Amino acid sequence: MSQQFFRDVSPEAPELQPILTGLFAFYASRYGDFFRNNQEVEKTEWYLPPRGLFIVLERDGEIIAMGAYKPFDSETAELKRIWTRSDLRRQGLALRVVQELERRARLAGYRRLYLTTGFRQPEAVHLYSSFGYQPQFDLSGDLERYGQPPYDGRLRFTKVIDADSVAQAS
Image 1 (cartoon, rainbow, N blue to C red):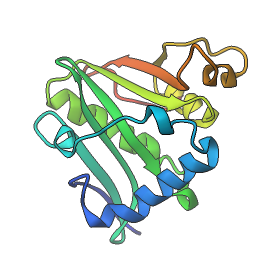
Image 2: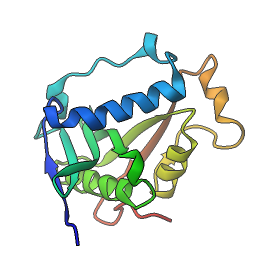
Image 3: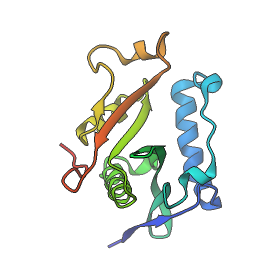
């Protein structure tokens, strides 16, 4: 049986390129250049301990999933880059990544989590909702409306984390 384990990495690690390429190709297929003019500028140091983290889940020497967090404010970490290789979906890997990020964020002293997903990712909306993340938007109706002004296309979620709030699929 194959063993899976988490490993901390730099967001600039060369071995991340294949899975990051998959993530950004997915974004391009869903959104085209929708977010091009409103892209976040990110800095590597945001994802480095002690306040940030970038992890990969490996199996048999291959990166199969990843996730990260960075500081949002003094008590809140922002989850980023949660991604599972497309050929390995629906195996609970995203849940494992989110659970590990939550655990590590608690250990780093964070009390809340914040994340965004896009308006054309209903599967991510379902995923985060099922993990106990509270949508900061109206879930009813067509999510496409959040891609129109006055909205920016990002769907925001929050969660309070403590020892009893580890993500579980519902």
